[in-house]
Length: 568
Image 1 (tube, rainbow, N blue to C red):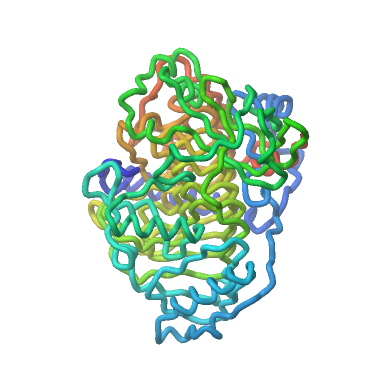
Image 2: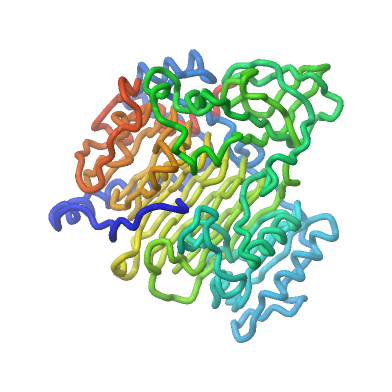
């Protein structure tokens, strides 16, 4: 993303195509919106056909299926429907916040959040009203929740962007691009020390690495080596369990070898991946070692069980180790509010000033619930964030560059009951629209029960893999980016399941010709037009298509919810 190309305004098709798309969208959007008002798993009517072959295959081998990833424990607290409700410990009015919007309330918010952290956590309440925010709001302590009275009753109006508040944020890959185009939020959840180091580096033009181990990736502390294991295993054998305990979050670290066999494995293996030229993909190779944070569920002798199954094989040639990581932010959240930026025209592509919404960075088991962002450059971000849930979120207003972005090794996140609303003003020339984005070796993320009145399934190179988009209605009018040095668009095991495409565009939704070992199930009949991609890998992609032309009519209707019912 840091070096993606300027690709125009993303307009698609003829006026007739777009009009037909809008008519089709109404029916599909109503159906998805109705589904989104329910919670939990709803039994499917017997009249709805199964995706018979693929789903039955998956049930027989849920953790090792070649095309469908196991994502049944994605999200905070392994996808729990009920999230923590810590007791109220502060009210922003007591710290000087003004609910009539006449004065800057950001200092009051930050004082209340910091003191809640000093007390060991708790909820900071934001009563109904409109609050002017002239600075960014930072949640830096675990167990701290910022809770408004509901997105229709509590509004925060952001008057300044991140370039003004922190400074220009360039790219570690060079050029004049603004990293605020894909990083940072005006509500920013990140561990306090990590956030301070990021801000300091940005102001010093040091362009920090944003992942779990920061700039000094070679200074991680190895806890133990890991013996060989297979993708889908829940338990591994370690050499030394002395530093491990139930509940600890550790980092599984896999280094690549000279032959790039780790990257080949992420791509699904086989002749196509083996013949691909990896050495010149400098941006992609900067993402390895692959880092997967996970909480330990049990330690029994040298046997260590994780709360999720292994996303990849563990092989000796990749020097597999459990290591330390940046102390993550945990059990923190934002709930029940609208963050509205002052309305300014959308910036030219990759020159965003940083009117960004809510971003989670180095966060684990954190969440947003009933949060709306409006008039933003970028909506909701997951940057080296894992096991987080975004529920009942919405991006609306003048149009965004990235409504949702997921990058820098972000894994096991859940975005459900979401909406990207149609822009309220035409897109200025030279701007870009993506959609629900994933990149940078990010894996096992889920987008479920969504309505996208604009945008696309943006896979932004950097070879993300094993991600799921399910039960979504989309007016497919966005575009992806990503330069050649970021490598392939897709790794193995992307699954698009029950997707209604209202304007008939295939790109980035029907992926059987471009995504290796992928599954495209129950999508609308579509055709190629506008941005058309060619495969990164030669040979048979080993992709599967089932129930083509039957959007929303395949059992199970929601792939993630069905996987939630699968038991070990």
